[in-house]
Length: 452
Image (tube, rainbow, N blue to C red):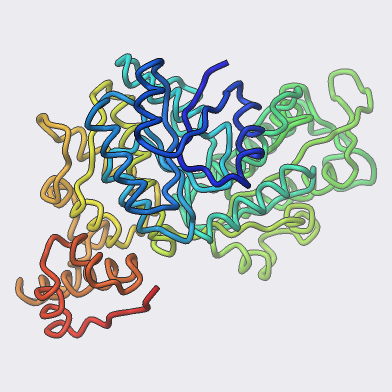
């Protein structure tokens, strides 16, 4: 059993934490300060989990450990109500940041990933673009609660969100508890096939029998069809509104009856498959105008999950960026790189119309374009920010002076929001003096925002 050193964990949480980590074959050594930590690490090397509830005092422990044992793997545990501590954890060189309540599988995956980095090995396929949803915000905590509920049921799930918000990742997370069984996770993009092709992909090339034309009775499903492959598991339907009516009717009947006739044998078999549909925000309009059959919609929408856009959960961006960055560095077999405070602040201010997928793509470009070094500065990010409405803020025309003013106003407003109106913390994040920040706020008419 592997061990992890956990510093500063509140006593009431220890029993549940031991249970979570024990489930992934990890034991816990409890500690409270750097003296104890350094003594234990001298005896045996192990990863460190550091609870940041104590704020600056906990970060000081991290610095003391880093000074004497630079190679120690350290991970932060934060409260979702303190997004500023997430940023500080990333800047302190934490390999990853976990929100409580702690999940044992995520901790184990992160440690395995970091050990692969140290060995200069590429990330295992099971960890690349992993099935864990990543986010510490309250919006994502609500999503995770719905996923946990959906995972314990076999009912249909409708996951709605913009492109890049992690709809398929959420679907895989719902499916994950079933992996110990025989069922597979089978994704299908309904927009990638014409009508006949989609029907053959789902039901099999020989499954267009007497019950495929709307007549009463059970559906026929070939062993070669994706639906048969998904028995006991999950079928993930992307762009289901693009499926022709006859395919929607057959899907609805199969989900209703939960039985089917196997085309090759003629046998009637139970057909337990959980349907999960990933749809865009315009899906409700497709239902209203009849492009989605009402009976299929009912089967797919027992549980509804709305994936928040990245711009609506900016407090997740620092930790998410750090996660993507380490994943990218691992896949390219280069030493992990670190983001500067100003680079993190810029990433947190951008609009991210392509959501998390766009953030990952930008960081991929940054890492690929760097000639060397481990630190990513503001200039490294700016070199890959598009100013055409993609990832950039300066897309409304005007003079250079006007564009700069717009950028500074939006940038300062976002940083102030991140730090709940705390001028000292916002100024430190921006890399300027408090007096200069006050002066810019007055000149640009930036509201201070809420106070903690």
